[in-house]
Image (cartoon, each protein chain N blue to C red):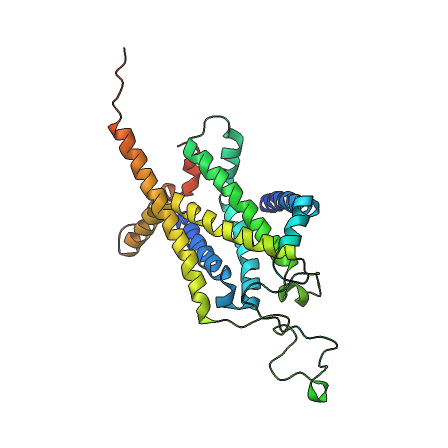
Length: 176
Length: 124
């Protein structure tokens, strides 16, 4: 029996995952809107999706890391540095968030003493993350718009793009 | 296996950041930041959060020794409910992202125009 599995549309997966994590991030950075319990659980979920996001773009990360001081465009270098800062900011936000958790961690029986420093760092890193996310979105804006357009057109009856057209968008940035 | 290894690499990188954070917390700069921080006691809820921490044994202070309905022991731990007023915060963050996109797009456009206007050197 012939296999009928369709190739995974990487662009679609990337776009949907990124859109979901963006919306979740926006909600998570507004604890007054979500409430403390949702804020904590949503933030932990965002952290997990960020790891998935990194795994999906692993080839780009490895490619630019290897050639950072070699043949890489300045655009990719800036993007790489920005992503590194974003990773640091996200790590600080997640770690300090766990340290000051009042709902999620106590549920597991973990009671951590409150420290003002973690709270301050949590706020600072969270504010920095919002700005860095803005720059991250800005640097990928063209891809976001073009991919959304392509996917909308395809949904409107256009023929599906070839699997070769569906490669991860950032994979090409290494050679750009 | 490959995914597991990559995940471990990502977590190891995060651990390096956490190590740096701990080193900062122990440093004089971290101590100064801790001392200069807002709030009179160790920690405390974030701005806008009203702590409803229960003191003493569960149920202490309530008639019959039981908490009123709705408290399952977690929401009462300094938590607070969702509020539509928090949408202002969401809007503020969304505005920051929008401004970033506009600024970067304008910068890129200006850079492009600058390159186009620059006279091309002809090879000798």
